[in-house]
Length: 156
Image (cartoon, rainbow, N blue to C red):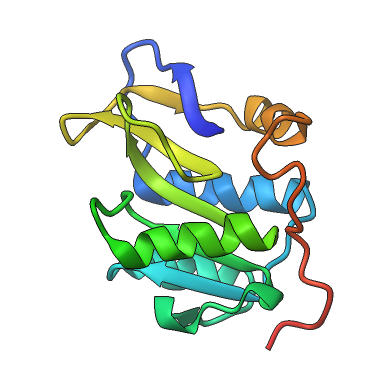
């Protein structure tokens, strides 16, 4: 599902911060909770995201599927074995969620939620539609439909 996928009528594309906030809103609307935030790459926004869930940012080698991890990347890393391993751990384990801020419009995504689309590294001028994202998240064919995205215990 893509958060910013509606024609923006010529306006500027959303910022990374706006996409992050749209994800937090979606997560709260869906009652998603995570026991771990895993940041791929260095991005100050990961700390902001972790703070929203009352967590710290853990490194990719600390992923623990039992803690319902939220895996974050600015863009999907190309040919990165660690990224592939993180994606597999969430998909195969049936727990957690993968969120990327920006994704190439012409490539298949392994993320459950994409913030915005880009072409040749430039963000496309689509606007965020939180209501549409909520409908997509509830769809029985959504990648998260059969996945546990609620951490059952108190966050550390």
